[in-house]
Length: 201
Image 1 (cartoon, rainbow, N blue to C red):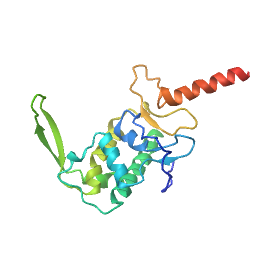
Image 2 (image 1 turned 90 degrees about the vertical axis):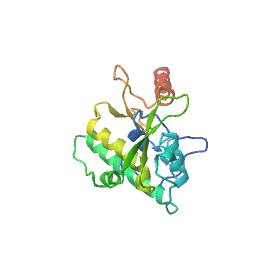
Image 3 (image 1 turned 180 degrees about the vertical axis):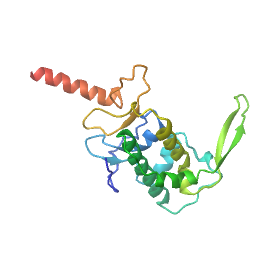
Image 4 (image 1 turned 30 degrees about the vertical axis):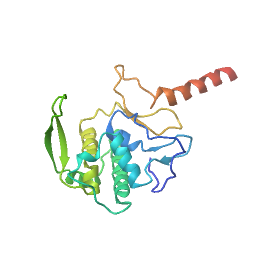
C-alpha cells in the first residue's frame, strides 16, 4: 500500500500501536486507520523521538546529544518507514525489492557494545552508536528491518484480516492462526459484525 507523503495526525487520545511483535512491523504501524481514516502518528521530530523511546530505542543508544535540523529526523524516519514498507510488501509477495534506501541507513549503523552493570542488577550489553545524525539514530530500526527481511518467516508476517485495518504483525502464536492485529480491537469488531449479520439473517 503506497502511503501518501502527508497524512493527518491521529484523533485525540489515540496512541501508536505496538502490536506487530517485531520492531520493523511496529515501524510500519505508525501509519494506521484507527477510525476509518489513514493517519500518521509521526507529525514532528518529537513524535519520532517519543516513539523510539516507547519502542526501546532510548536516547542512550546514541554516542551523544542528537543534533539535527528541525524536521530532519521526521523526514528520515518517514523515508526509512516507507522503504521498509515497500520491502516487506515485496518480500511478502515473493518479489524482489530494491534495498538501496535501507542500505543507506545500515551504513550509518557504526556501533560498539558497552557492558552495563548497575548495583543489584545483572550485567547486560548496551549498544552505543558513534554518530548522532538522524540516520544513525534510526540505524537500529534499519538493522531490525534487515534482520526481518533476511531471517523472518514471511508465512507468519501478516496484515490484519479486518478490511478496515492496515496493521502488520508477526504471528508468534503457538498455533500460527492469528488473524487480527489485536483481539481487543479488530477481533472484537469482527465478532460484532458477525453477530449483526446473524441477527439480520
